[in-house]
Every structure is written in structure tokens, then in C-alpha cells.
Amino acid sequence: MMRAFRYFARGRRYGNSAIGSWFVRLLVGILVVTGCRGQAGNTSKKLQSELVLAAAPVLQGVLEKLIAEYTAQHPTVNVQVRYGPSGVLVNQIKEGAPCDVFMAADMDSCTALINEGIAKGPVVVYGQGRLCLAGKGLMPLASYLVPYMEKTSEADKQLASMFERVLEFPEIKSLSIANPEVSPYGKLSVAVMRQTGMDFTGDTLRSSSGRSIKLVTAASISQVRQYVLEGIVDAGFVSYSMIKTSSGFSNPSAQSSVSEGIPWIMVPPGLAPPVNQGLVLLSNKEAALRWKEFLASSRAREILEEGGYIVP
Image 1: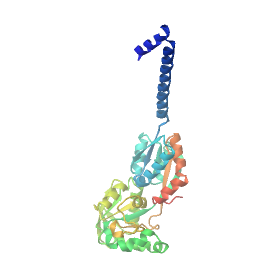
Image 2 (image 1 turned 60 degrees about the vertical axis):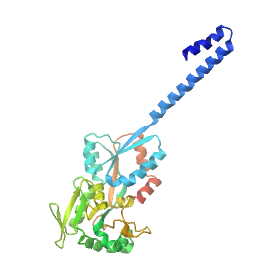
Image 3 (image 1 turned 180 degrees about the horizontal axis):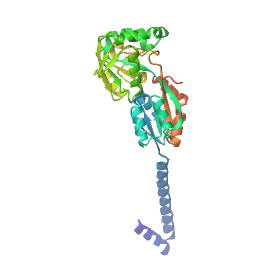
Image 4 (image 1 turned 60 degrees about the horizontal axis):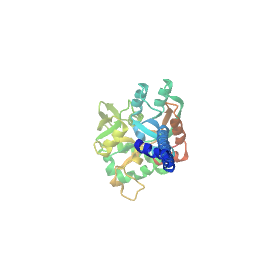
């Protein structure tokens, strides 16, 4: 390039000024365009920001849709998610795990971080989750459970008695719950079983009628879902959001037979009221503030409702 430049530049010296002048202007133009492209590339890199979410596994199905919508609105933001039981995430955040937003499966986990001075309050309730019992052990009752899946007003009145009968069903020989020490839904599952008269002895449950059921404690509620869908256990406590966003569960609204999926029943509100799930900010990033604002938008609320949440 430099040899050609010297050759054409000499054109002016040897009387061919038109060629020399033309080539100099061309070379300057190339350098300007190249420089602009490089500057534009650097600018696009600077515009790319990162948003790290720490989220309870109960959120996974609906969170994927929320992120897709958010990034469509904010294409320069790269969203990453760290999933884990709320109690585990709290400990990781206390130990310095880098996160911008914490989306828990309860309110207490968020409050714990505020009390430590790590999170910025107040806690925002982004949705209310509900607890369900699902599993192949309910299969002989599948056709009877449809009204209790659809939650009609009449079903609400009969749900409590139906739920207790399901727990006594002889096909349920093993039952899984999320670890209650770190999972809010696991803790709620234990409370439900105690209210229905079940006793705990190690890894054995004993129903009010004296029947024994093997208790399988999973690391998280997403692992309970896996156990249920793969038939490793006869039944397990999962969230309604997981049923709505996971394939493999019965869909009473579909045209196909309910026997084609894993049957389930909503835990009566009297035993397990809707769970307030909270959010707190862990950084002052603009992307984090926008995420909080986005969750209050009509589109985000629609996604949450479609995913099985009650949006207050």
C-alpha cells in the first residue's frame, strides 16, 4: 500500500498531478471509513450491558418468556440467570456472588438480604404462586380430578375433602418434596402434610389412617418436578407455574384425554394459601431498574398470569 502511495504521489512531481491528487483523496477516504467502522464497533461493545438475575427454580419456565420479552425491548442488555433454591441463593449472595436482581420464591429471603444491608428495599411482590400435588399415583383418579384442575367455584368447595382422599390413595407409595430447609415451597409442603394429619419419622410418612409412604426429599422443587415426570416417585409437591409451563402434565383445557399427561390437583387454599414471591435489587445498574419496571408492565403481568401466577 505504501509503495503504491509513493508511486502515485510522485505523479504530481512528474507532471501527472491529476493521478496523484486523485489517489491521495481515495486513500484518505478509505482511512476515514475504516476509522468510523472501528469506532462504531467499539461503541456497540460499550452499549452491551449485563444483567444477572438470581432466581428460584420455580420461576424457570415463565422467566424464560419474560427474558425474551425484556431483551426484545432492550436488545443491548445481556441477561444471565443463576437458578437455585431461595435459601441457597441467599447464602451465595451473602458470600459475594455477583447478582443485580434477586427473585425469590417467598418474601422472607428478600427481607433477610435487606436486613444484612445487601439488598435495597422495599420488597416487590411480582406474583403469587400456588402449590399442587402431581404424579402417576393419581392416574386412576385422573378423570375425577379434572374439575379440581380447572378450579371451578363448585370445585373450590369440595377441593379440601378431595385432596385429603388423594393423599390416602393406595397408589401413592412414595412422595417427594423440595428440601424445606432451603425451599419455601418445600417448607409449605411440610406444613400441608402436617395439617392433613401426617406424621414424619425419618424418610417415612404415616397418614392419618396409619398407611406408610416413603418420603423423598429433593434438592429443589425443579428436581421434584423431574422425579414426578420421570415416574421416580408416585407423587410430589410442585408449583402450579411448573405445571403450566412444563410439558408432560395433564391439560384439562386441551382436546386430548387427561390420561395422556401426569394428573395433578391444586392444594386447597385453606391448607396452602397463595405464596407471595418477592423481588429486591442488589445493584444500581440501569438494566436492573428497567427490569423492575418491566415486571410491572402489562405485557409482563400477562406472561406471569399465563404462567400460572396470580399477579397482585
